[in-house]
Length: 452
Ligand SMILES: [Zn+2]
Image 1 (tube, rainbow, N blue to C red):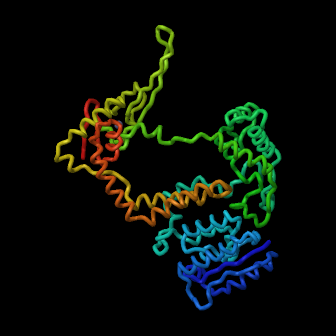
Image 2 (image 1 turned 90 degrees about the vertical axis):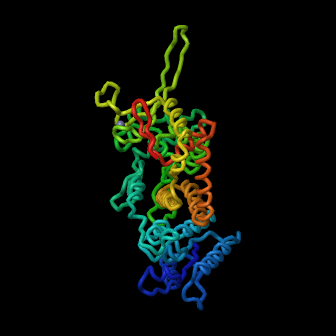
Image 3 (image 1 turned 180 degrees about the vertical axis):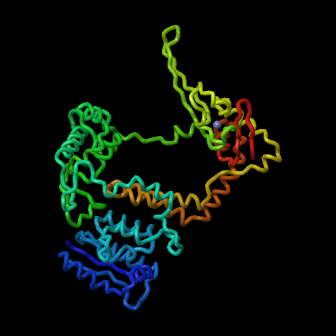
């Protein structure tokens, strides 16, 4: 295959290894050993001993320009390790995506981790965190977030050979094929629920001997492993495994998935109970949860009637008849909201001055965005679609880091607005803004006790 080399002598890449390596020779040697046709090496200017960000940026652009020429053939980009392409994780991802979308693949050849994403995750840090010892990988919250990782797990339809390669498990592969067939059948296409019912009725179970459901089916229909991609981004270096599904059928399934997936409105359900954060049970100090009950009955004239009842309820409150319920509160949703608005809008001037807003700070939000970014980075495993979601997370993160002042300013304007809008005559606007207040409202059976 065709290849170009790219290396830097920036601070980070020099620090990443104690021995002094001739990167040019290294790239040439790699190409000889792997039968790649080396067409060009992009190296730092000889008179520069330590490339800075701007110089590296400029040379990276030269690399992109080189391939923008439609006459240039597709090619591997060989770098010693990820730190040669960028100084931090965000820029690296940005460049990785750009090259990926130009159909160029990167390999890190002077490292145990040849996969560029895994390599970057190991070697690079987030922007602004390069020089402190913060290791995001060890972060507790982060560990939690990454628990859902599938690394090392053998996907349904395959098993491991004695040599450690993926080989087809004929029995499971047959089910995978059947799922794709049913889902993409043009005469009689099955939806996810129908497929799971069908498989379950046939006595077919998942590998863990569970019933099939829409989630387990989705993880099959979306997994590019079935068309032969195992390594991230289909950078298949060796040991290609056999595909189970034809690419055409797989792509068709992705199209149908896109069309059928309803736009989820995540906020509509949780947002009904806006006061959960500030309403507290007087007995156990827990925040009240929302509870929705739907009832339908047939009235005397034979009509079906439906009604939805909503409550704020203490999570410690057990079933209705339990005597330990004593004191753990339950309130009708509309009654308590009305009372809260009344009480907040009629606070004394003195108390109103003490009101504070409970919004997450710039730094907290930044941390969340960074976590989210790393999480998406790890999710890219086996999943080509991931590139779309990491792109938007990355853009948000970069915007956030580049516009600190403006964001903090908007933040303070937002605070003033909230304090103004809690007095709104519009009930839902008042509730919305009250929910941002940093107050605790202790809920008793008959009254509310507001602590500011
Ligand atoms: Zn309670």
